[in-house]
Structures are given as structure tokens and as C-alpha cells.
Image 1 (cartoon, one colour):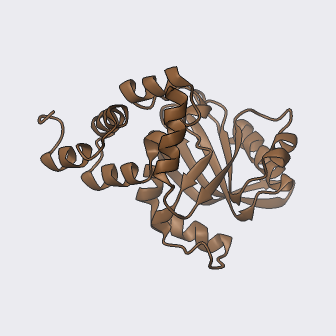
Image 2: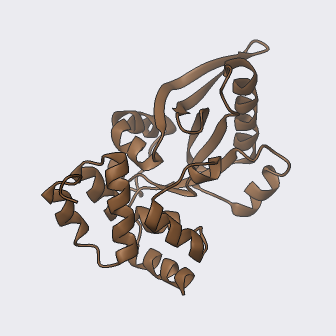
Length: 234
């Protein structure tokens, strides 16, 4: 692999004992042209295991051998985003605006966590509906799926009204912002906590491109993730 990876990349890769995990990072590193720092961050954040835990055995093997394949909205949205690079203490109080600003200040790392295909469009994107003004926290465009990705950031728990508001934003973008060739938008309400039952009821009958995800401000326990993936493979 010396024609595709530097010696420093190889030194990072050979520290990974599991061959499936190592093969995934090798493939993604080449395909996405990760720097050594990016490879180290993705490895430390347990990206392979975070993606693998929602798959079956065949899906985990495919992920390892082929890397992350992007075909649908489910392939690009994570259930949990790791934002340890923001440097926020989980015990400290912070405002949504502060969280949003830190994401902007660390956009390169945030794009790495979002995954392949994301391009940044705007923050506090304005829209007006019947003389009422709204702002979407973060707007991206996904160049592989050819669609806008709208993200609203919540400091604490996601409420049902946040889900309804995102559904409205998605409807607006589908009708007013999409041009020929664009696919329906993806909406992500990103909160620190997620009530699974509330989300199930609040999204009942809604667009399947609307997701509620949570974020954590620390690196995940990789050993616990590894056990979960091992259980899937067994």
C-alpha cells in the first residue's frame, strides 16, 4: 500500500488488532484521502464499530471489505454523533448558540464526523412563512445523494415541537429551494438526549428522511462497542 498510504498512515493502521476493523480504516483512508490526524481521530472515535452496531453480520462484513457505501439517507445519518473535539465539559452549562458556534469553529472536524459527501452551505439559514421568520441552525448539501441536509441543534432533550418544526423546514426546502436534479431534503434534529418512545410517536407517519439523533461530548467506550460488534458477528 506504499503507493497510496504514507508510512505514518501504516503505523496507525498496524496498531489495530482486528483485521476487519483494520481493513475498513485502510479502505476509507484511501477512498477519502484522510490525513494521519483524521485517521487517528476516526480510529479513536470507534467509527467502524459505531457504524457496524446497527448492521447484521453480512452488513458488518460488507462494511469492512468495501468501506461505507452511500445509497440512502440511512447510510449518512448516525444515531449518535461524537463531538469530543468541541472541548465542552459535559457537566458545564452551555447555550445552544455556544454549541452552534463551536461547531462552526471546528467545521473541518465536524464534517469529518458527519461523514463523506457533506458540504457546508450556511448557518442560521433564514426562511419566511406567512410573515413569520425562522432560522435553520446549519444547512449542508450532500453531493452523493444530491440533497440538502438540514440540522437543528438542541442543547438538551429533543421535544416533539422540534420534530414538527424540522418537518416544516423540510417541506419548505422541498418546494422553495430544491432545483431540478435535487432529491428530497434530509432533516436531523440533534440533541444531547433522545427519548426513543417520544420520537417514535412524534415521527409517526412523517417523512422517513427526518431523523432524531443525539450527540455525546466524549469519546465512546470502544471496548463496549467492540463487544457489541463481536456479538453480531458471532
